[in-house]
Structure formats: C-alpha cells, structure tokens
Image (cartoon, rainbow, N blue to C red; front, side, top):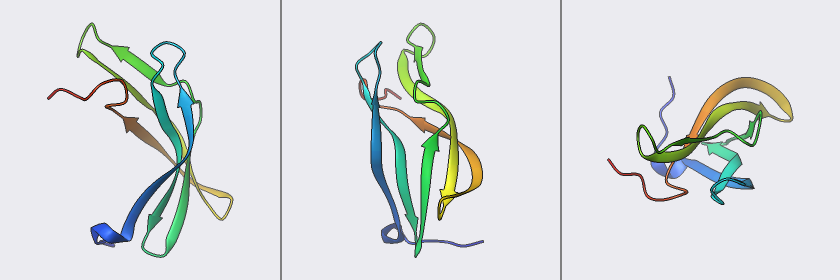
Length: 90
C-alpha cells in the first residue's frame, strides 16, 4: 500500500459538462496526480446527473468512469460530484 502526503495528490479538471436540466457545471473529466504518476479520469457518459430532491433533497453527478495512464485503459471506477447546484446539506 502506498500513502501520499496531501501535497502529493492533485485533481485538475480538464473538461466540464453543463446539465440541461439544472444548468450545473460539473468537472466530469480530470487529471489526477499521485506522487510522480498522472492518471486521466473520463466519464463513460457525461449525463449522469441525479435529481434526488424528493428523497435526499440533493442534486449531484455520479457515475462510471474509465481510468487511463499513458493513453491506455488501466481501470474502471465510480465518481461522485456534489455541491455544484448548491452546497450539500449534512
């Protein structure tokens, strides 16, 4: 297992998507740096916004992503982005 100090980890948005339903702008694709390695996180679909105002009162983006390194797929994952319509209430 590898541990990184906070200054060794960086998320840099490289592409956004604007929701036609809520007008929220989400950073759906990003470059991730961990130590000396760089990764690219890309959504399988841009439109993965969930409107759950009737249950949790929140709107957020969550969905499947692909992880690449050196232009080669190395994994799949899940990304959740909250607070882009309004601040998340806990």
